[in-house]
Length: 456
View 1 (cartoon, rainbow, N blue to C red):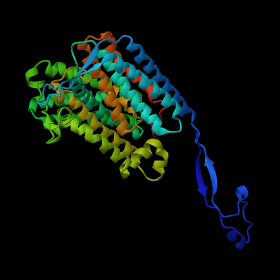
View 2 (cartoon, rainbow, N blue to C red):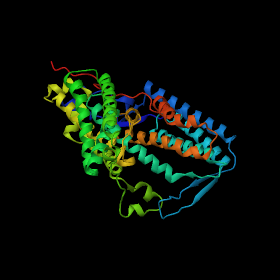
View 3 (cartoon, helix red, strand yellow):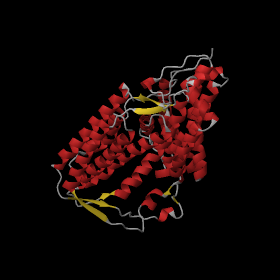
């Protein structure tokens, strides 16, 4: 590890003499006025070292698994790039199973070594992480599809990933808004569940997509206000209150479902479904266009909210106040910032995002509501938030990661892979645990996250 060198100009000898002060000693004994050099050595923290070692071991373990799967791979793997709903047919790509899995395992092993040795070079660590991710996905999919007549549907995998990731992204962004202000939001699940019910009910009664979205946003904000009034005003434990909100939302929507939707499905549970909006020009791109640029409005909203939340929190005066309240509310209060007001605003803004995410479960997909339709996606969004280190971009990326694995368990089922179906269903959750424990390493939440503020 080569130390960085900084050249400092040597002070002129005439200045201190002229001021009547003795000149400082000259390092190295050089008297030619040349700049002196000092060396700065990067010291790796204990947390960073633990993270680097655990991640390299994890990548090495995945490499060993890929090399072991090479012995179980037979035949060729086929990947279909033909979208059944598109006019562009790109056909099927066939690759030899054993060589691809073997090369993937070897490259993954090199990535593990690069991550282990790249402690002073972030570029090497990031490149190794990208190589490891690509080779693990390619190697695993090749092993799973090798030797089977049915091809792996790449278009279906990508479309399913986007569909599953949309509410997760909005839920994770809701968590970013709340927790950056110092309020732990375990109630994302309840907010999205209530919003899903409201959008289905209002959409069924009005047959209006716009009215359904507005109702979902109002429901999400109402549950956020319920969280804020108890945690910000009455200083109730934030985690406990989040669990209470989730239970209240589940009970309330279940009761109203039985009283209304269960009695007259045609009137109260037949909401319209959003149509897809094709972006002119981009939607005509073969394969990629139909997958990425022919989606519903909520998908585009979720994508646009990622830079919007980032700009709002990191490049506006209000965002600076939100982050200051989340880090040191006492200091923010001393300069005249209303801690309670900022937290209320951040939690309600997060409720808008959670409401949009909840609407996607009904009017964005099936057009009807069922009990506990969110099936724990709010907690998954919370995990994506932690994995993303409370940053909008990383949280959205982690939401895509979880959605990809969830859809992968669906796509691999028809192929008849030797992996048990029960393990395929557990795969997304296991991958999340592994990622949180190994890939993310030690993370630091906002310093005042979860701490009630008592004005003195």
